[in-house]
Image 1: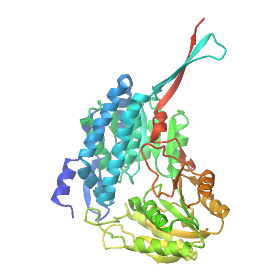
Image 2 (image 1 turned 90 degrees about the vertical axis):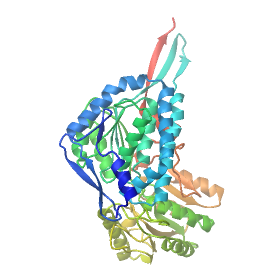
Image 3 (image 1 turned 60 degrees about the vertical axis):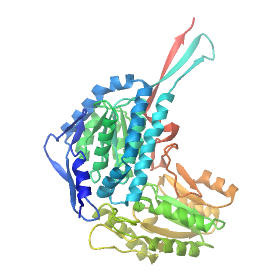
Image 4 (image 1 turned 90 degrees about the horizontal axis):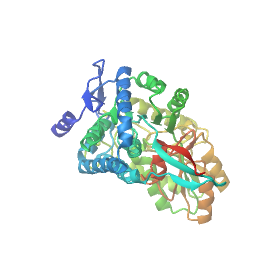
Length: 488
């Protein structure tokens, strides 16, 4: 049950819409429940935005766009730096809030809060580095002047699995570039984004620059915004299915679009790999965020000579993890976010077993309350099993084998997705060959973690386009203007 400390935090968290710098009810006065996935208990009720609220939010962003674009870059950067400092001071309470609505352990939530805050620190420094160029035309007689300007009002649609960091990854570069924005957080986890809105207001972000409109009717709210000529940019993190639909809807307005979509990350372990390091990396790549991450290792391709040992070691580590409500001490694995998500995981495991995979550990529900699922390792998984082609988004590691480097690459690339891949080998030449030939946007080479605010995050193929983070991240929010200067 919710403790007094948790209740006090929840009572202090905004639960209304943030529009034009004001917290307000939705136009319909409707609200929706936010549940603790560990208990099923309602922990908050949040204002349920309507299309009219979305229109008001975009109007506020549009009204604030000119003055925010004209704000000195140093000032914009200082707002982000102040927000970074405030988040850092409030790590524990923001982590508790995240754990209550999403389920992950407090340690995992703290890690996300710190990771998310780093996007504000990084882009605070990038705000003053936006520059164009001045050059002489090759034929002489004129000069070529290019300048960078903010794209304009932007719509951000963020997912439930990293409810704060997926917001800061978009908000940071937008603020630095001089763009205003409307944010629609996931209905399962809106509280972290609402708390972030409060932080940014306290950091000095002007009214209307950031507007937050949670809703249970995403398509009804988003559709009109995508058709509104005042909107100039869409950034979405979520499933490929929804991403495709949003790309189609954005076409009539020819919006600038960034898509961070689904993944099916291969984890390759070659015969010369350091198995201790490979198992450590597998635990990180698989179990970060309970496996509910687009970067999670989705399928393990292991050389046939080391497959049994790797599978045994991984199962030993997975079976030793402690399950429980994320607020409890020493908990490693919290609940999945919803009953529907657990049912999806169960379906994929059942299909793999029916196809001939063997259960090494796990493969069952845990506990009487909440959406818990035991950390699971499956051995001998046939390549045709659904779990080898569909995103698991849960604590399940399916292991299959390969014999040659070419076979490993063929298996790894046999997917419509291309977000991230992981490679474990001590052969430098092989490492470079495999990294070059993997059809992904990111590679973890002897590393189970690729996410870094200073690096460009994004994929290829059906995993999307555009990059978040790094020097590339701010370019998504800038237009290039060319001026021809006659010198004769």
